[in-house]
Image (cartoon, rainbow, N blue to C red; front, side, top):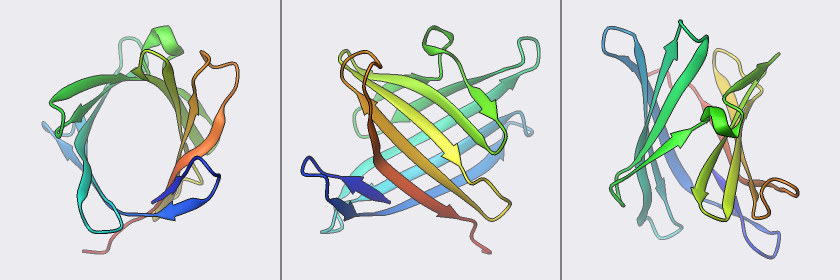
Length: 140
């Protein structure tokens, strides 16, 4: 995982992302942990993703375990979830003045790249790739 600081430089951080099917395969649960350079836990949470076949859309939520907070991911009012070719993208409103655009790209059986762009002006301008994850499937 790489985090772009305010000066434009990047800081590598250690993270783990463990995804699995739950609830008889109807839901995908992704557990995510991120640690700073000193090994301190700085992010801990779960994504829950379920496909609604009636509306042909994904319903997703993030549980921020460190702050006991829920967040809607890709809500319809922000454009829902878009899938095009080998990429998936959606938006989330993390704070009143901070919009995140999350993109999964370079998706294959063994790998995907994950990017977060941030806008503080309602999506007119974006600070691209503020956070980047290169995820590789473990053989364990």
